[in-house]
Length: 279
Image (tube, rainbow, N blue to C red; front, side, top):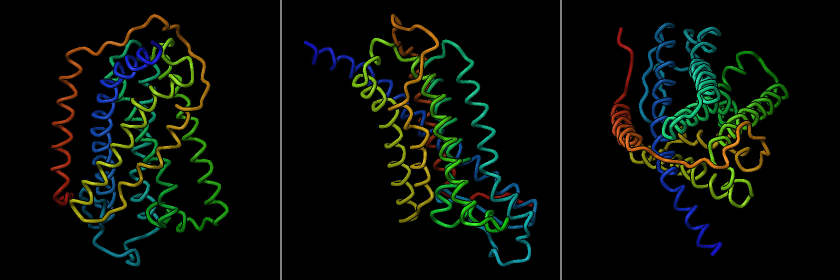
C-alpha cells in the first residue's frame, strides 16, 4: 500500500517536472542571448568588432591588439556577469515576494535567478578552469593566484547561500505532507529540479555539438550545482503552513508551456547565424 501511494505521488510531480524543464530551457536560452548581446554592446562601444552565435562570443581582433585596453577588457568581459547579476537579484526578489504564484511562473522565476546567478558567479569558476573570460580580467587587475582562489571560494559560497533562499521558497510551495521526510523530499527535488537541470545541460550540449561538433560554452551550466545542492540538504524552516495545500496546474499554464517551447525554438534558430551590432 505504501509503495502504491509513493507511486501516486511520483506521478503527481511528473507534470511539474515537465513544466520545470520547459521553463529551464527557455530561460537558459533567453539569458544566453541577453548575456552575449551585452558583450556585443560594450565591444561596439570600444570599437572592437564581435559577433556571437549558439557556441559563444567571438572577437575580430586578438587580445594583444592595442584596442584591448584595461577599460575595454574589464567592461566587455564583465558585461555578461553584471547584467546577469541584476536579472538574478530582480527575479529572486520577485520569487520571494509574490504570493500564490502559479507553478509555471514559479519555475520561470526559479530558473531565471538560478541561471542568472550562475552566469554572474559561476563564470568565475568555469573561466578560471579554462583560463578564459573573467580570468583575463583577473590578469588585467594583476590579481595573484591566492586572491583568485579566494574569489572562487566566495563565489561558490554566495551561490550556496542564494540556493538556500530558493530552497525556502520551494518548501513553502511544495505541500509539507509530501516533503516532510527526506526520502519524499528527495524524490520531489530530483523530479522537479535536478532532472530538468541535467536534461537542459544535455540538450544544450547536444545542440551545440550539432552546430559546431565541439564547444565547451554550455558546460558552464554545470556550475549551477552550487545553487541546487541546498535543495537536497538544506533544513530551511517554512514560513507558511501548507500541509493541506494541493498543487493544481491550470490549463493556461500548459498554454504558456507550449509558448515557451515555441520561443525557445525561435531563440535557438536565431542564434544559429552569427549576430552582431551594425554600425
